[in-house]
Image 1 (cartoon, rainbow, N blue to C red):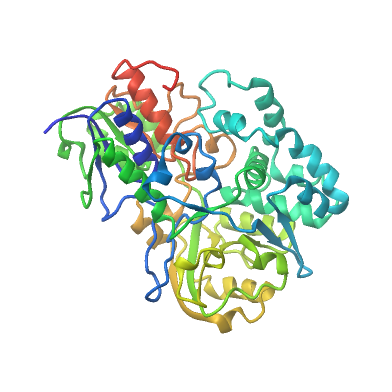
Image 2 (cartoon, rainbow, N blue to C red):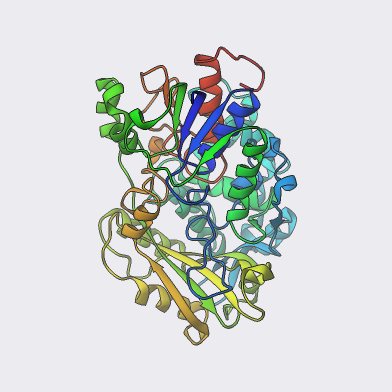
Length: 480
C-alpha cells in the first residue's frame, strides 16, 4: 500500500503533522513504536491501582494556548482542560510563597514593591497572547513576524539572560519566581534568551493558565489520535522503524525523532553535509523524575501552594541558579530545584478517594547514574514538613529510563536538545532557512529538535507539515 506521506513517531508533533497533512486531503500513515500514541504525553499506572500518573509531560500551558491545537476540535474527542485555582506557586526560604495567578492585577499587587516592575515588564503583552504566541512559536528565520512591533518589544526583553532580568527586581519573591520560570529550559540563568522563557510562561499563566487534561495527559494524545483517524489517517502502533527502507512508498516522510535517530534510520538517503551538521547537535542536562502515590495532599507550609497546580521548589534565585549550574557542569545539585505538579487536588479522576498523585523532577547531568531521591525528598520536607509520612508508593524514573521510554530524550534530556542561547530556537542547525528540511527533498524532521523547540504545543509538527505541503505537494495557502 502506498501513501502520500508517512510520519514516524506519534508524539504531539508527529500527531499534529499527520493531522495537518490529512486535513489537506493527503493519505497519511503514522507509525509509532509504542503501544499508544502520545510520546511523552502519556498516562500510566506507575505505582498502585487507581493512581493515574503522567510519566513525562503533565502540565500544558503551551498546549492550551497553542495556535496549532486551537484549530482542532479536540473537545469533541474527549479533551477537557482542568485549570487549577493558582497556576503556579514558588516556595521561598521563609516558608511563604510567591504566586502567578490568573488575574494579572492581583499578581502585581501580591508582589508588593516589585509589583510595578512586574507590571511594566509584562503589562504590554497582557491580552496579546494569540498574536504573540503565533509569532513566538515559529521559525525565527521565516521572515518578518505578523506582529512585528509587538515581537520587537517582547524580543528586547526576551533576549536577555534571566540572571540579568532578575537583577531588575529588588526583593526575593519576584527574583525567585522568575528564576524558577526560566529554569524550565535547564540552561544556566546566565544564558541569553532565558528571559524569554520566563516571560512566556508567566504570560501563559495569566492568559491561558497552566492546565492539565482531565484524566491525565493521555487524554490530549488520545484526542489528537481520534481526530486524525476521523480525517482518514492510519495509525500503526507497536511498529518501531529501524530503517527508512521498512516504510511503504510515499512522496514525503516526516520524522518525530531526535536528529541522531533520523541519521541512523535514514542516513543512507541524507546528504553528508547535513549529517555532519547534525552530528554536532548537542543534548542538555537530564531530568530525574519521581511519581508518588500519597494518602493525602502535599502538606505545603505555604497555603498558596496547596491551591496551585504547579509548585516550584527552590528557596531563592541564587539556589535555583546553583542547581542549574551544577546540572550543566556534571554535578548533581546539593539542593536541587524541583518542578512539581499535584493534579489530583483538582481532578479526582486521578486517584482513589482521599488519595493523591504527585509528580516531581530534578535537573541532573545528562546520563546521570546516581540516586537523587534523598536530596529531592529532603527539599520536599524542607517546604512540606510531614511529606514523607504521606508517601504510600513511589516510582523512580532515572535519566536512562527516560531515554528508554522515549528515545528522543537522549541521556534523559526531555527537551530533545540543549537550550543554551540560539540552540533553543534554531534547531537542529543554526540559521537554516527551512529547518525541517534535510537536503533530501522527501525527508523532513518534525520533532522538538526543530523550531520552535520543546514544549507540548505541536508547532514543530505544524510548521514541518506546512513546509512539506509547499515544497513537495505544491500546496500554497494562507494556512501553509
